[in-house]
Image (cartoon, rainbow, N blue to C red; front, side, top):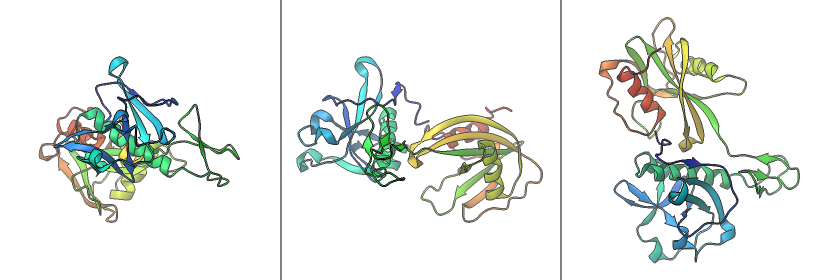
Length: 283
């Protein structure tokens, strides 16, 4: 999956200044400034842009790797780069990181995108309206007036592989750009466990009951500011699908041998479908 980078990921916040070899990330909405050659991407280093950015507009994000090979990533919140320096660089939508290489740069790009959007949308205190300031010890925005603490947004959600012996329930979203097969998914609501989320989402989207809910694996999914938790479960009772057409365009039972999904090395959803297709997940 996209977070399974070969090097170590350090996400603890440390207030520090960039070195010339560290990466500087420029983000607009859900797009990141990068240079792309086929599927290979790279970002500006601080050494390349240091004459054009203000040090007070740079925020430390995270580091990848250890020792001499460690690379640190910083967010640049302002940009005034000359046209000649920008040649070959474009703002690419976050979906580019689904296929971009090398893998650690794809992970860095989408994670930086998530953090940049949180910073952009977390400027004022939701309690008293005072402009927030950066905390010096944690990745947190603090209110200097009422001391309210604002942490990065992370929304818990579930991915559900509903099975019935040799069949799995596969879906396609309604009204989204992503047109490939997926699994039932949904966000956890206040006051419910993730297991209860599994039951509710399956009932809401396809009108079926489930049993034998088993946790599989989790994944940070920065494309939607989400922490995904994958579950396998079994059909409990009758198998007639009553599809919510506002959420889904397709919902159907597919036999293991008829699944057309191929390995993509990116998402938890894909890994779970492949695990069922290859009969690698056992209750």
